[in-house]
Length: 547
View (cartoon, helix red, strand yellow):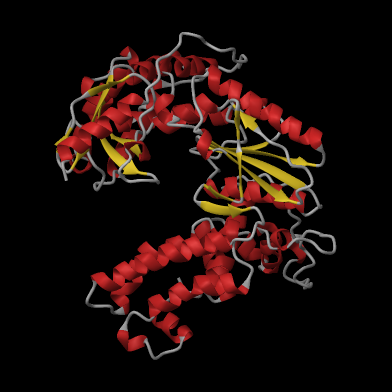
């Protein structure tokens, strides 16, 4: 209840994690690519106007007090002045003091709510600054993507990648290898306060190495220098404190700057590795002890990288998960600490168990969804379908479908557990309780969750086929030739991956083997849809879905 004390404690915590650069610049390979940069193209009036008119007026303002709704409503009037300010700022490398001020909103992560270390600082920065940050980020991303400078292992904050692509590639690797009778050791790493501990000097060094234009490098250096922040809770603020390291969480530029900072880490490793920003895992198929030693060698490289670039691990949250037959047990060591074995690991919000059954993830999803459903039931007197439906779609169903392409259940008990939440939701209106489930779905204009998962699989695969999302499979999927797709009918398992007798259910029911039979049954005109929305409409007609 003491907000003054709370903001001070949290402010002290956030300023305690900063890192002081040691003045040592590690070696980094030369990248012979220079950024092509056109100032007029970067700051065209059409781009600035587009950002202004698309602003979310519900977003918070920064410490300067300029609100998005003001800029959006006055877009035509502020367009020219903003263009001049942005042009002068980028040309000179000088940034207004107010753009370097951030109100910090502490966001709870996990663990004890009374421990200030369990909160992360989200910066509420100047909305005006964010417009210029978006313009600069677009130029940086174009340079990185055009020259293929971003590691294929990185799935965070980059085009055509996502949490789902990261997790699908991970499960593909694990199930493909253990289905052949092998063992896969996965090491889950946790960087401690990764965004807050980025050395500014080392980051600027990397920006130059990756060939960014001098003007953008100088502007970014100024943007990072002399920043200050204060913690705010319920209108109570702490004192201003300097920020000497890190990239602001909640800013527009922060994520892509961190991606550049960590980009060289996975490139030196020989094992399978995946990242989503600072979330990292690495693994290898284990056939003998030497494979364990190779994985340990890669872990040593990761440790050296962290020491060289002044980042640290939270060893207590770094674990080993062993999948498949445990023929070889090896003790992995990070920074002199023995890593604990785990049977259950949370990976980008999805619970992985060492047997690759998804009952823990299903239970978590059901528990979270039921909690939200109870809140709806207890908060509203009127529970007509017109009230319940939008609340259910916004607050409940997302828990049942987050990244479900990765963990789609194949045991009937898990399928029923998920469906039971929607069954209860459709029973909230008193006048519908005596109707059967499918009649209630009709009144709610909904379909079963199982049907939605089928639809979601097809949409995910369409995005990959069209290059909207990029996924690198262990074995490239085999699709039915389009010219005979509408004529040939085969058993549904004909186009699945060929698996040996006794194949694991986790592989048989993996996304690719699950989606291909249904994909190959789609008519050619549906598979050839020109947009995601057109494809969705075609699929809806095929499986009789209602939107």
